[in-house]
Length: 280
Image (tube, rainbow, N blue to C red; front, side, top):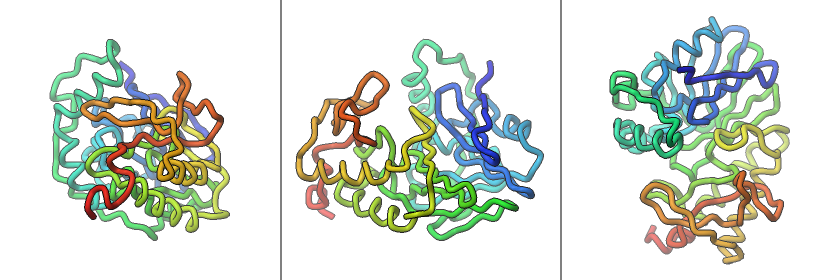
């Protein structure tokens, strides 16, 4: 079974796609390479990445969720915000990973033995924080807080290519409904800060689900949508994900793109719009 495929999408960036359709990004400089995210921890990701580059590999995790961080223990040098340690620890359990794969793959779910999963390990990673900068040789990566989807979510700016990796932080279906995610009100403030910090520094946006590339107006579109939610100017299409019942802010088509032509969407709980609703 071929679990990963890849495609060169820019002079320095190769997009890796998993069987369950998560996107990872391998960024190569003259001296080092960075892998952004590690998927579910199956399919021997390290061996696959090493077949693509002979350079030393550093992993940067955008956040600690099951579909992004579980392959990290395969690698020797991994960065993640410790704000997501609790999430990572909860999501690394084998049952969580199997349930996610069954949900996303359905009948295409491969018959995997427990030994084929990367074993659960404590999140003993190097600290990733806003303001960090990675020099790969001829290409530099800047780290920016993009908290909301999780407390430790980070965006990555590929400086020379003027590309911002938003991942799950801000996209066509931003999940903002579980216990660890921000309220819409707090998320809006987080995105406004991010937008100020990266203003004028990027022309392209990479995501981790649905479509790998998005409009450079994604940040502004989702900030505006936060305001629509707070003003109750939304369609609130019912949506269920695993054990959560929530709403899609704006109506979408079969490709999960907004039918009104707007950029970006949020899946949220009506009980987590404002800070006062959760008492913090």
